[in-house]
Image 1: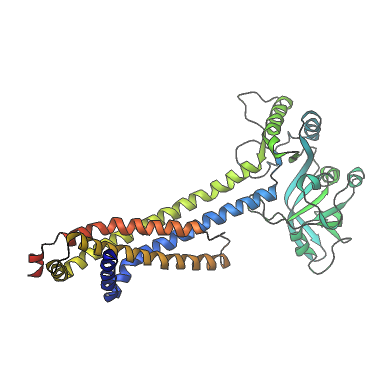
Image 2 (image 1 turned 90 degrees about the horizontal axis):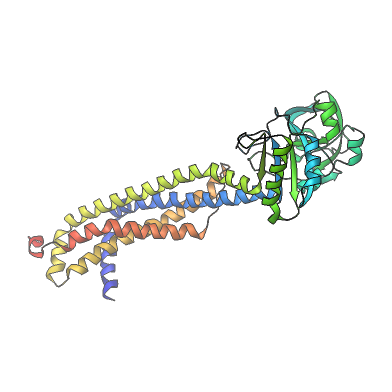
Length: 402
């Protein structure tokens, strides 16, 4: 009860100087608000990564043409990945549920009547749908017969549909890819964002034979998608595919691969790494705000000790001990930072609600941000409140009353 009374005296002193109290808590308020937004951004990024991994496929491996260590798509100038490689993988490596070779071209012009757009063209076989777990929402997908007959048919993504056929059923309609006329036989299910943050639905599928012979005029693949039977086999299948391609492409131990193997784990690592720098920068800024807020708090409290010298001397003269005075000023410091924490969390939550309406930044509010903010407020209030409280407690009551 004694400590509660001492704390009450400190709170009354804060209430009597509202402007000074607001200035003391402003630094903590800004720092906690920034910390709340940083934590929300981290949680939002984590959720976005998991969504992208789900879109990519947790049991999938992408064997893409071209060496290097960057994750983004195939190198379309590399010609070493072939249908024979896909067949060798199918025959020699176990644990595979589906394998789908494909050729692709980026940003090809597509026209339907007066409407036109650009999309990524994928030439693929019928098992592309099973390998991607991605099927036609309207009409039907690419079939074996389409490939056998070099059919000029296509399956479009939702974005292509919105651009070219916004008000009509596209199935049965015609469009042109370059100078080649295709009949739309289906529309893919909506997929959303790719692991690299691009529009997964801005694509058009055509039969692999049609694409390689009639549209692209090439005999090499851009990628081979492999879907393993069980996620626990992902590492073993990846290792076996790499060894097989080293043999087939005659790649020595000291030579760089002319292909890349990308899995959901690599996608998640790449996506997390790309946002880590920004998160660290924002966290440092939030920490600096708290540090500056603590310094401001300490200096204003030191000024307050000087202004309240007679009050402190009077309290000491009527029986208050040094620990009592120390506790009063430390309570004032903690009260200011805790109120700054409360207001800062509210401001941070408000920003997390408003910012997604104006930016694509993913923000997810969590209880961890409140716990971290409360911990930071207690640390700042205690650490920067000790020196003013100690100075107040050490005042000589006789000198203070003069």
